[in-house]
Image 1: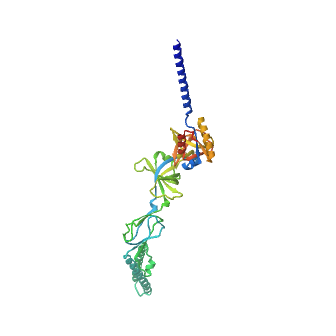
Image 2: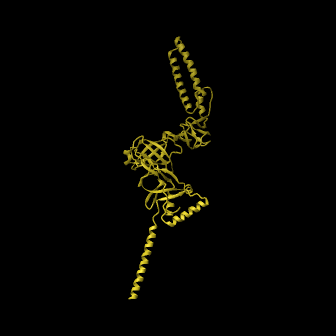
Image 3: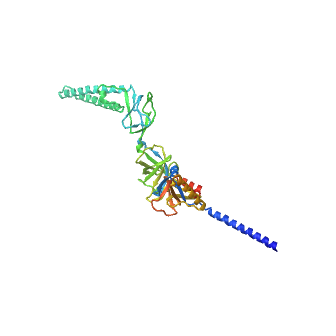
Length: 412
């Protein structure tokens, strides 16, 4: 009996130790809590990570239509530089990228054949002078019954024919840039000037010095980018919400950093290229610096005046399927273990002894629900009320999340 009692006593003691060990493990597991919601960053960390602060803004995102398109210039604002006469290029005064004004000389050509037209004009001018004298003389003879009336009529007809010929020659020479009055004074030239038909920037130069040109061969092309248009393509379901004079905000697809504005002036009445999209035409407003015909753009068409709270898209981070933003707070970083508190206290004292600065800025992780995303901003629905103009991390939030995740909310 004594042996049996001893065995039972030992088993009870072992069971008691096992329960204490289990409780100890559970207690330790209880202390290993999930990371806190506060993260502390030093001034050096904030500077190194490029962290920037801002506020939750009101943006017109939810009531907008997103569309893709391209910048274009209407045909009336593009022109080819051509010569009205054939010849050989003597001088070329333009190059790609140069701005020219309407009527500015851009090239000269040489054509000896134009001397014949000038010679004909001089001859006709002389014939007209003689015909006018003869017409006056015949009228005097008729008035004195010294000549028949038909002589006056004949000279009058010849004079009218010569004047028509002169007018035709003057028009031809004027189209070539040759002054009829200069030809009338005996000046004959064989070098013709070519001028710019519109004001704009030279986009392409085709000819070169010494090459032959004719009216069907363009020398260069001019584009007036001050009249840039926006060609967008929207789906038919969005057409009822569009109208003329609506404002469009757009960015370049390859450079979304700057936003531009445009205004709708025309809505297409047919589908484009056998698709279910309809072309929308808008004129670009304001500053057009950096915009060139053919650039791809991403646009947001405003269809209402309602605004929603939004933050820069990079201000939102995701952790374990939940979206968060980081809010500036005066709360301190949480610590759960006494050993860590004592260790942190000792480190802090050591730091003060060495003269180091431990100034930190605290941020609280706040859960949000994402909404529409447009032009670099995303709508957010807060799961916790915040005071107006609360400061948040708008750039570098990923660094704050990484520090919080790596330290488990305990690092000083």
